[in-house]
Amino acid sequence: MAQITIEIPDELAQRLTPLQAQLPQFLELGLQKFQAWQRATTCLDEREFDEN
Image (cartoon, rainbow, N blue to C red; front, side, top):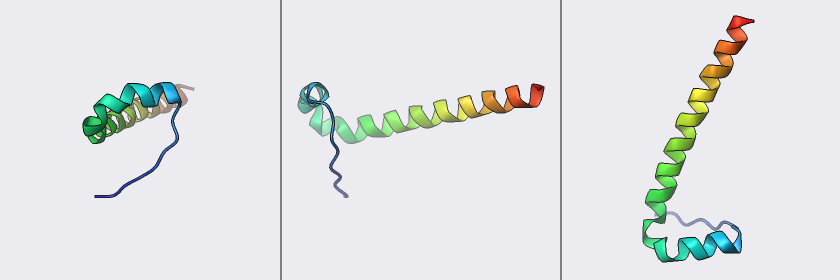
């Protein structure tokens, strides 16, 4: 398994500390949601472009 180091605000670090064991799952879910949002906004942008 790979390890990465990131810098995050102290307040976020405090909130995440009790959840360290679940961080990989949180990151995976967050990435999936972000990618879905990205695809949706890209489709909307393309439709808007096609209408003009």
